[in-house]
Image (cartoon, rainbow, N blue to C red; front, top):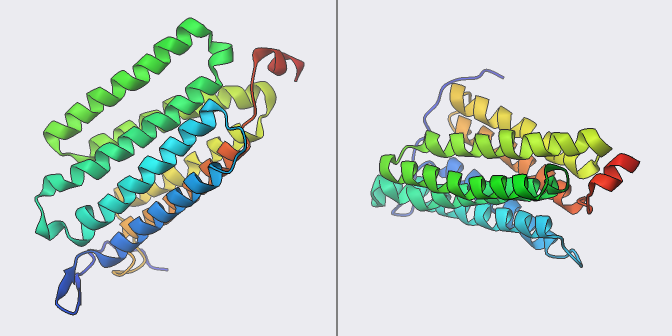
Length: 232
């Protein structure tokens, strides 16, 4: 398969112009996977706080993806560019919820004081990045925020838990970073198999894989404690 740089053409349905149609469609697929995960995690009989935070993550990801599909791609030509902001900000809320879940999972080892610090930093960081993206309307700011939450927040916390007790949830959560990195590289290099399946579409599919692994990780979460880790 030959990889090329591509720009996706508009299509017309009747008299309706739809910009970046496949990109909008794959964005809706992200929204659908996120909403499915939100519903599926809602079936857990007695969810832990961390699992509730994961549901918050999926709810905001679903909303962000749907808003992005319509206002950020399909019909952006009808609106000012800053209409992309609501979807971006919601995805940042989702990333913060995801990071917060992992911080809470590792709190038994980090100690109460350190846990409070990192939870406060989680909120402070969101306000800083939201302020920057609101004033610059620059999407890479959103990507940097997501990278920090996934790599430094979720990544370090879940790696520590996995190292302590080979936790299956941590393994799945760590694996979710791999397709997300692939999506970032594809987006950065704008690699695409076809003009009708642009690099954004390829990235979106990898994001769906990441979301699925995050859902499985959330389902496998069990109560953790340093005592359990030492026993393991």
